[in-house]
Length: 230
Ligand SMILES: C[S@@+](CC[C@H](N)C(=O)[O-])C[C@H]1O[C@@H](n2cnc3c(N)ncnc32)[C@H](O)[C@@H]1O
Image 1: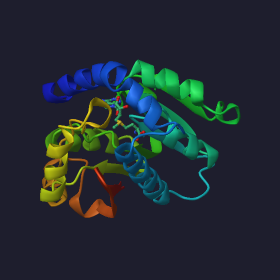
Image 2 (image 1 turned 135 degrees about the vertical axis):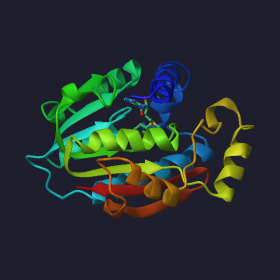
Image 3 (image 1 turned 60 degrees about the vertical axis):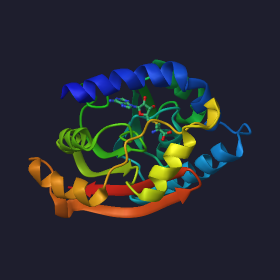
Image 4 (image 1 turned 180 degrees about the horizontal axis):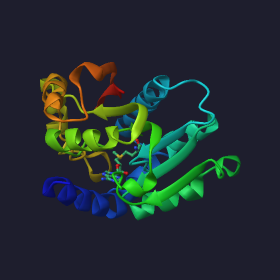
């Protein structure tokens, strides 16, 4: 992979293992959070629902990769619907938390690993989901990730981008002056049309196979949910 991808992955490993760990622990728990974070939680729940909606209701017999699984919220829902899930995250501490939080009845359905989501040792999948896992990468790296993963998926890849809009750019700027816990993360907004147009430069990607599922907007959280079908 490109140096820019490897460098960003290293930065994210440190960020999620240290700077952002406590905030992610709390955000993905049931504990109370600030008003700003409550809106983020609401948005993330809507995104998770949208990502799950692109999959069959019954996932029994399907192998699913939760790429950049964080604390495992999506992985738990996938496994509850019968999927055999591999959850991979570059952050050792988030993976430890995901394993700790895994409900007993799902332990046999999910394997969590610390590592790179692109590692080919994880094999092939029916579905691959990247919920907010590419939002820190630049457009070209997002396409390179999708191109690689598309060689290892049988049916669909679901992923999110942070949309490049004037309103969101303003919100992200304002969010920079918020107190530490509510500060906007270092995301890279992406223009959806440009991403899809550029995809035709990649051998495994075809622009007509991309589809936008929905837009999620709640306060300072924004995501566009997209799928790439084989
Ligand atoms: C914004 S968080 C989202 C976490 C999770 N998908 C969720 O929605 O709760 C992004 C996650 O992607 C992980 N990540 C980013 N790049 C990665 C890579 N190359 N390989 C594995 N994990 C990665 C980060 O460590 C982080 O946990």
